[in-house]
Image (tube, rainbow, N blue to C red; front, side, top):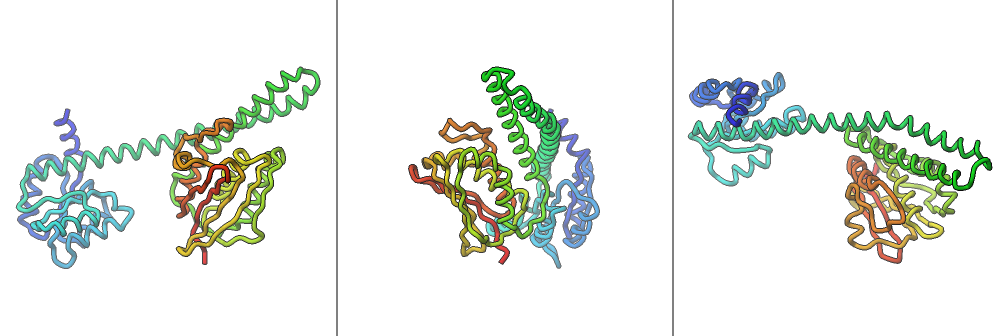
Length: 365
């Protein structure tokens, strides 16, 4: 099985050999070509950088000691370019100093081969890193396909479930006193379950969007964002008789408004569900010295133990207050999208004294 895998790697993999000594290139070229690899050659760092922009090799064997641009500088350019950063680089060098080897790894090389080169060692290291790279590429592709499938399923489920919610609400209005209170209670329970499904789907869609490519970070109108959240949660706020206090003016931070709206929606709805009776919360901000703004919400809930605080942002984890049901995705998604915006999340809590949930974002000033 291993021999078959090796043969497949040889036939499908392209290697770029970079060395300013023709003799070294000739020996490696002949050996690796005979094994079945596709081989390209570069005589210096500049030539190597030009070649990789035209066609990416699967792996680069890079000499360290070269005139004009040495191997360290060449590798640094490769790793700074997003298009070439993922190409595995193996240094070929006569240097034996640990400092030089550490420097190479810090730049981004995956391995070292010490000159004079032993052919069997070269082949073993090439095979090892090509196998790792092929497995990484397969995993990345599977992740892309899985995310696309999850997004499609969640999106396709959203419309029919929304229809179910609407039909259940209409059924309650139409039936009125024509059916028993138990029957109306069953309908209400079904509607509540459908709403939970909608929330889970929305969470999955938000999670999928947070894993995609870069989004444009802009100055945030935090007052507008919080107002939109209050409108979304109007029914929950009214039913719980929640009291929300917030500043008249907000400092301006940078982020992605749709995501930050979801952060506040999660924090405020949790403060209502887990808060006192009635829930009371205070929203605010603190400007930090490191160019970040901390936005926070204080609640009047029971508070959290240290163990509960440590587990809060772990996916599919629910804290000990079992009276509130949830799908365990909310805070983990909050953490993901805040980190994508360049900030951090956290909680400070003392049992019997409520909790403060916060997130940080870069300041625009």
